[in-house]
Length: 314
Ligand code: NCD
Image (spheres, rainbow, N blue to C red):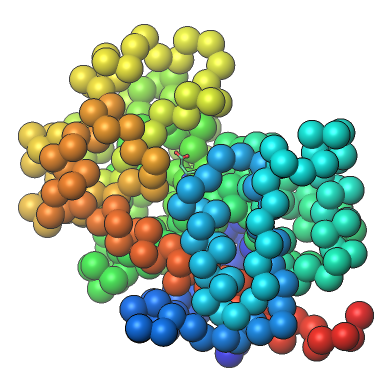
């Protein structure tokens, strides 16, 4: 398969052709994951380290399954049980994993720019994949969202995608605002004024401080959780008030197109940004996103590690 991906720290690492290449390859791996024997061992003999400094269910599990379905050896390191608790720096931790010949380091870290730092200024020879860096980016999430939309709608070209909620603290919103337009979609960002980034318009999206105008005629509505852990001060009067103004329910969804899809990267705060009825209803593509996540991460890991170096060459 095609050219190697040296790192994936940001959607800015990709042009439209590179993004399409990942999505096309993910399509093949998606089929593999639906077979009775879910293996496509292109990464046999390769080592992938998942280095997670923040909580994760979907992302960590799907990177692990992705690596294992490709036949790689996968090791999970979580910061709470690593030498980070003894004062080791991120760069030193990465240098140590690198000395063990990791081919890919998948990094989730609370600091924006952590993956880029490790990829460019660290000492790692391994490819670095950003699994979420603070409030900055989460490129594989945007790719799995694009995969889900392409599968459901055929193409992203001409789609209007409303991303709603805590935009300011959301790496998912940022990565999607960069990727979806690259693939031909229009992005709207909506949230309370206190949860919109200062220069939201610089992302090239239409920005709304109310939900309704953002939903009008949308093909896709992506709801986001309030990132309580990143909120400083009183950005919100109360969750109940937030739910009343910005929660998605059936009557609000009726403003969007009749066949509009509901997306959410998870974890959902039910009854806050999304009603149970919609989360579990026929318009929800939320578990399709999760299924796509494994395939997309297989594609990214494959492109980062396959043929990167021949065994024993370094
Ligand atoms: C998101 C994350 O961690 O950035 N979740 C995910 O990766 N699926 C969004 C969130 O935490 O709200």
